Length: 265
Ligand SMILES: NC(=O)C1=CN([C@@H]2O[C@H](COP(=O)(O)OP(=O)(O)OC[C@H]3O[C@@H](n4cnc5c(N)ncnc54)[C@H](OP(=O)(O)O)[C@@H]3O)[C@@H](O)[C@H]2O)C=CC1
Ligand SMILES: O=C(O)[C@@H]1CCC=N1
Image 1 (cartoon, helix red, strand yellow):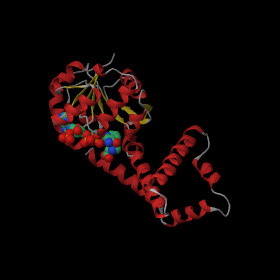
Image 2: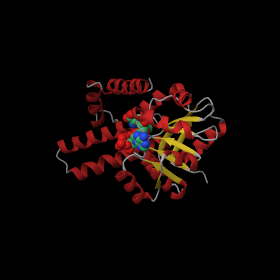
Image 3: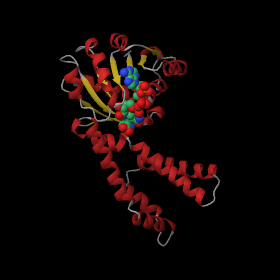
Image 4: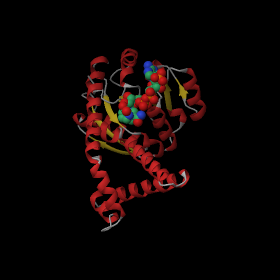
């Protein structure tokens, strides 16, 4: 069985470990590094996964998944450089960081695969996009794709598209959570009890997501089917258009893309 070490078990690192366990992988095949002993102890207690140092991770793991903040990458690469070689496989989950950065800092020939996942991997519903670096073969990409398929869907994209992917699906769950939060607030405004508003909106989100995933119809058609002539929905849509919600989303996602580009510089 492939041994996977997550370097930096924060939010996405933990989501990956939890998702892989959920998908049936043994805790013995997983490792993580973490700089705070309390956080490490908490994760080991919760999942039964061992915390190791980076050199041991490189020795024992077939796949090293880098999941630190892009701002923290420098010391990780310094520690990794003396302990990895062409037989290692480095997978970067870091927003913005190009595979060329790893290739410059690690020994010649180390294969690197860049991945942008998202947090729904905790429920097996991640959207992950993978891109091969210069030394990564199709077998490396297949291995990473196989690993991530256990926690959701995977597509391969040219690395030049990864900043856009990061803005769209990497950050994407946050936009939906934000929308749900605002819609629950609207329920409160209309006088509904919070628990009722939450139930109505969360199940509407689940139902709408399922229709989007399972129906072959375009979202416009699905929305039109809700929008009865002279009815309630069109009055709400008029307000959304008046407040420029579509333009705000375009600007927001463009700003996320720009930040991803900046993090890689
Ligand atoms: N959160 C998300 O939805 C997604 C995140 N990503 C990417 O994943 C990466 C991590 O993001 P996120 O999980 O949100 O961030 P977190 O800050 O939650 O996680 C990063 C973790 O790495 C630890 N860390 C930092 N440096 C080291 C080190 N040298 N050795 C061991 N551990 C270290 C941090 O510790 P400390 O607490 O001390 O900082 C922290 O626990 C980022 O690059 C982000 O772009 C990608 C897709 C989605
Ligand atoms: O906000 C971030 O920078 C990370 C990358 C994608 C989602 N979260």
